[in-house]
Length: 197
Image (cartoon, rainbow, N blue to C red; front, side):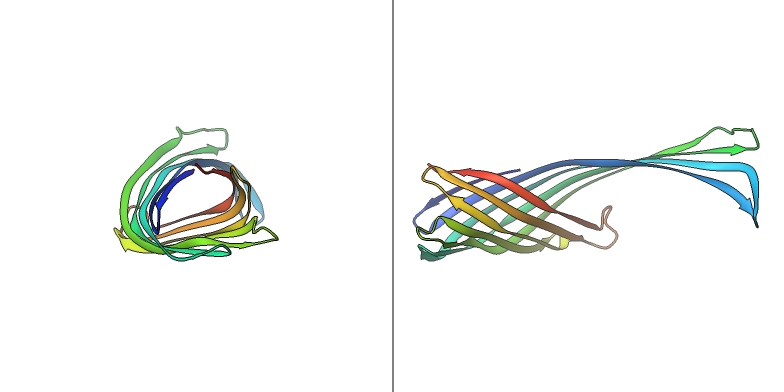
């Protein structure tokens, strides 16, 4: 993920891009029993899930609070969620030494979701020279989804050349009922470096 921001006076703009590629697989075997008697039969299921997504936010900002210890920008813009989900499965059976052909299948879903967003972002600085700070970001929006929101908060340290920070990020989508994908959320920690010029 990465962010680029530009500001002149109170006005500014930023863009934020996230790419993710996650997946997993699961295999499970089940023996068949009747009462307490084990039958010479069993079923094995194998499944693989792969999710790839791009999340792109583009917004304009206006600084409503500009103080050395506290800044707040209001923002308005749009966010794109481009997600692809692939699921593959295979069922195989063993019936007393007889192995019928396995049953296999797959499913693939793709969706593009555009939403308008509004929010606030900024920082609360502290320390002798205000070198420590708490960055914050919150937005909410709707459009192709019923509701999307994002929150980011953490801790950072400012140097002359830039900043080091660690944050927790949460992004949630509640898509419209009957959509190919109805709910998506991502969250986790991020450690980063910000350069200023």
